[in-house]
Image 1: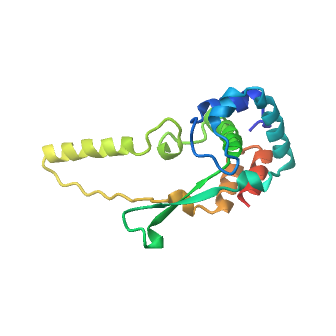
Image 2 (image 1 turned 90 degrees about the vertical axis):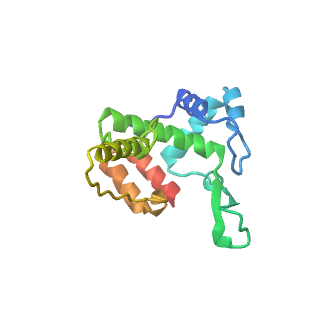
Length: 188
């Protein structure tokens, strides 16, 4: 992967793709305001590049506000709550820029298989396999044959991936070492 240099255009593109009123973190900043104050894009690009080069980020950037959302009607049982953490908008913008660069690298080098729908942007995850299953089911029913199938639910699969493996995958995919080291620091 080429060396990552963050430009004001990268910031503008990341902000443009972001929803206006998504819940902000400790910075209390909505993307709506970043879209309107385009003069900040150059300053943010410079600060993001400095953070990337120094491989450090203020803890304010990686500290979120966690809200407990009830999963169902029983609000007395603590295990029935889902924690949702809202990260700062500035951090979301930086990681969006880095994600876009990594995806561009993966696509240009054809690293990811087309079957990796769950990790690919612009794809509806499981919709394709479900449609294929539905078609197979109809064909089997029509020709009066038996069909044996199994589905595995990888619920919360990404919560269970160790950071060491994420770092190793970035290394295997030959992501820029500056980005790898920076993300490793953020994971800490």
